[in-house]
Image (tube, rainbow, N blue to C red; front, side):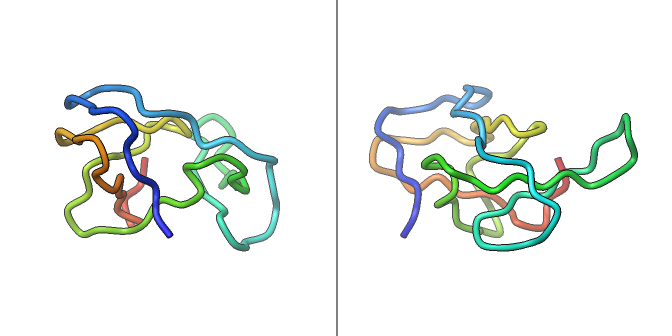
Length: 88
């Protein structure tokens, strides 16, 4: 499984928002972000296509909060990847 581009993206282009219910426990397709305002981790269980994002050491996309942006050019049919260890 993976998340593949249906259109091309240039560096800096908005790809989408990781949508889903807020959760308190880890699980499948959960993205954790540190909330600077509250000082706590916020988890969201993905329920859209971005839940299929896979890890890559040199990803072509990165999160800013729960919003995903291209950090490298992405062509149609390319897999969109992120660094699971990166902190948005």
